[in-house]
Image (cartoon, rainbow, N blue to C red):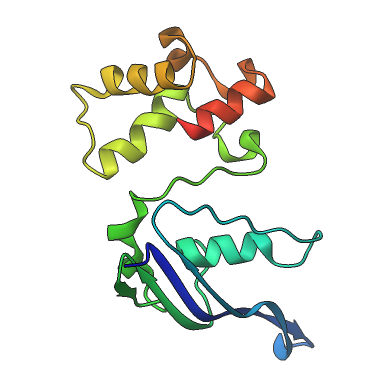
Length: 165
């Protein structure tokens, strides 16, 4: 069984114009992508700037809802038009953004940034959140004390590791 199967995925964005913002055309950011990823495989999406790589990734993860196509995660079809249908799969994915600083809220400590998704997905409780965050930081080679600092206090490489954690 495939981990990921994408069939004829399309993500189009409207071009609007005029006084009433009428749709006058479409930007076909992703148009007819089909791919399969088996267990143990790695997928690399390569292309020039603006060709739709990020939109493809965002569409597969449900961060941008696709316009058309079919998507299967571990053999189960995802209703691509329904944002709620993605929730059971989100905890199985790791999103690593190109720019780690833009993906880290500058007003939150590293503890808040890392513990919130774990609490949402039931991986930890408020009572054991500090322990879980300390484990994650250790896995990426950062000290436990890092959890009480803000993103601006870290180098680009350290922020990338926080994103991986």
